[in-house]
Image 1 (cartoon, rainbow, N blue to C red):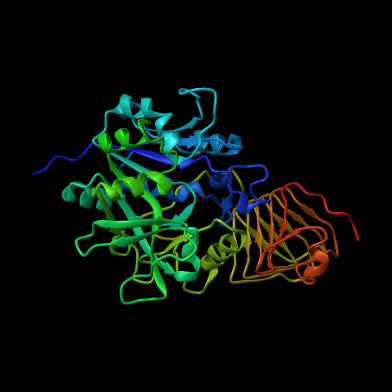
Image 2: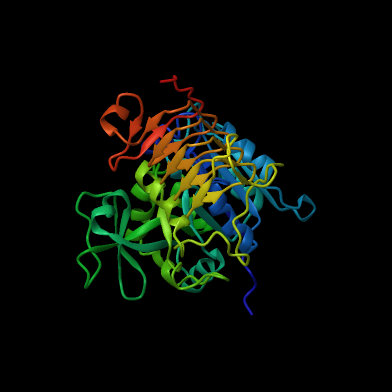
Amino acid sequence: MRPEPKVLVIVLAGGEGKRLQPLTNDRAKPAVPFAGTYRLIDFALSNFANAGYLKIVVLTQYKSHSLDRHISQTWRFSAMLDNYVTPVPAQMRRGPYWFQGSADAIYQNLNLIADESPDIVCVFGADHIYRMDPRQMVDEHVQSGAGVTVAAIPVPKHEATEFGVIEVAEDGRIIAFHEKVPSPPTMPGNDQMCLASMGNYVFDTQTLIDVVTPRENSYTDLGSHVIPALTEAGVARAYDFSKNEVPGQDEREKGYWRDVGTIDSFFHANMDLIAPVPIFNLYNEKWPVFTSRRALPPAKVSRGRGGEPSFVDGSLLCQGSIISGSHVERSIVGPGAFIDHDAHVTDSIIFPDVRIGPGVRLHRCIVDKNVVVPEWTRIGLELDADRQQFTVSDEGVVVIEKGRRLPRN
């Protein structure tokens, strides 16, 4: 019987998240709240925690304070067993400059790999929504003898320009890798779909060390430089994410993966959760998503101060939220949020500790933390007027940035 490999996990969490602004104006992208209760990074970390891979370093860089605090307060493993999740900021070990890309981030932190001496290094992104048992990907990687294994999933051709696209031989070997090209190749037999990289990699340790260490060429990015180089060397293979089996997961959810790189994709991924039969099931007790739990009372739905009835349908209400004589439909209401009487909130995402006054109308809005929306305010109903004050996405989702105090009408 082959012994279990020693695995170190590196989670890349240093990107700026420009396309998700203004939600990333004051925080790193992996720290953006999701589904009311969670942060984006919780999904990747939960997959490794459930799989028993408990030596995890999180490489951070931009606006990392809230992310660092979330990790340090939430993600605690047994130190007695030498397990850990630890944020590692840019240390400038190789000179006075920040990470120049994902490959350079690993190169600047090769000391972390040397300290652990793992057989395998999992390098995963921090900001995707999915369930995955990484043990199955590691097992396939070890059995194949590859230098790197790349998790892959089919995506529509019109979306594939935002991803690395893979061409694969019948035996699973990657024969070409195209990083964010304007006209990516489609899958054999299906001219509407492309095989995209999920940005999740399993490396043989020595292969990773060798390829990120500058010699004749200086590789700064995994997708643009490292994976194409290993593809040319013939040591890169693809892992079919759609065949990954997760305990408690039904067929509907198999292969679910969302890149939430834009406001619209972030909005749709949240809305996936409130369908009558959701595509992604938060209630899977066999493979839970872990996060911090604030000491808040239960959610409350009550009549308003004047006896106005509440109506709530198709929504998620987080702990400590209060619906007081208001109408909430197809929405997510974050921890500690308060929605006052006669307010109507539809198709919206309300972040923690938001205050929504009486008579407010919000439709297709994302309201960031600590925003106060005064009485009788209307947002999301007249987009031309909203664009004068707020960020409005391509699909008409209005975003109210963190901490904003809106003027009374």
